Image (cartoon, rainbow, N blue to C red; front, side, top):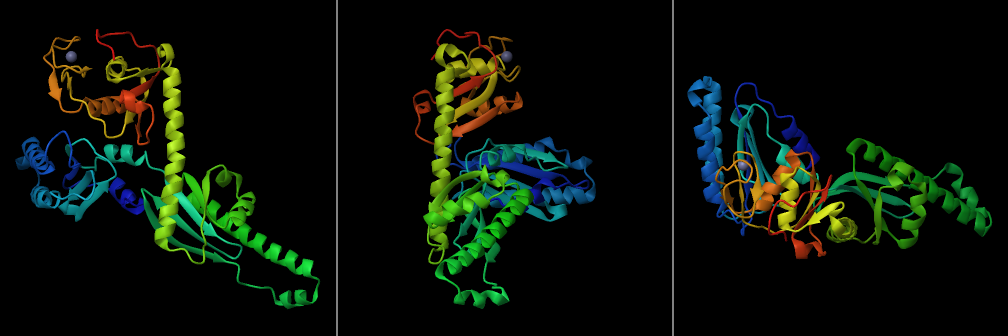
Amino acid sequence: MITKTTLDRVLNLHSPVAPILSVYLDTHPNSPHGPAKLRLKNLIKQAKEATPVEDLEHDAKSSFRQDLEKLEALEEQLVTPQAPGYAIFACSALDVLEVLPLPRRVRDRIVVDSDAYVRPMLAILDEYRRYCAVVLDRRQAAIYEFYMGELLDTEIRISEGVRKKNFAGYYGLKEHNVRNHAEEVAHRHYRAVAAALFDRFKAHHYDLLLIGGHEETNEEFQQFLHPYVRERVAGTFTIDPSTMTMGELKEACARLEREFEEAEERQLVQQLLDGAVHERRAVLGIQRTLDAANAAAIGTLLIQDGVTRPGAICDNCGHLALEATACPNCQTPMREVPDVLDELAEDTINEGGSVEHIRSETQLKEHGVGAMIRFPVPVLSQASS
Ligand SMILES: [Zn+2]
């Protein structure tokens, strides 16, 4: 998992003395691009060829050579990858080697520069929301971070254990007064938890809040939340805070996250389908989506996760197509690519659009891909699908 600390560390990498190597590698076992080990070898070769080592200062030269050796050593490790993609940042002069697992496939690439090349990693991480999870009852609360399927104990515990000195006095009062006092104590506790959550949302920029506990406390606690936090409640789950295990908590968070994101994805796909009527605001299917990309009309690209399609790209003008013919724009012979959706996603981001990978079972599956468009797209090709 990539924590915020790791991310900040990578974002701040800067080396004026020696180059930083940034590597992205698709390590999915069914990658249409073939074995990851071979591709890493090729990337290393590419970096060697593109970097005139003789121009580097002595320290930079030795740092760069060590980095390449470290990358070569990773080839073996990546034969049995733990993730479908990796981002790797190496700079021996800074004593840095970060091998970061990514939650989905990524386009292969190596960049040698004085800064870490982070854009592809940020594009992927952007798809994952950072959740804050609070588990509470009327006396205690614990706050966690839930991110990319992992639960991070943030060590924040709040308990309303402190009693005022005159508390004993209440015992002599009527039953309802004792209840009122218990209520008061619970409310004070809720206010403290709500304040702590607001602070953490401000400090950590969480996207959403998950609330776990007994049904009635989940309900009554929410009115104490700051409006900023309240409108970010993704849902609640029932769990017994005094007996739950971390495993159970993680599972409950993952389930709620999935439910929330599925609902959101369904809504997005519905928008796409509605917009595709007469292609007023959207296009469906690979050919029309390529047409939209070629016209730079894509606002949001929706790709059914896991779908790949061979195709072709013009290296001269960037034109995308399903068949490698002469480019209709500039007549350059087009180059075949194993997955044109990969090029499509890259192109969309470069043109200022955004990309959503739909993981749920939706009607998008029948089309594989579609896009919300910014303006009507002329029919460029004969065979529209
Ligand atoms: Zn062209």
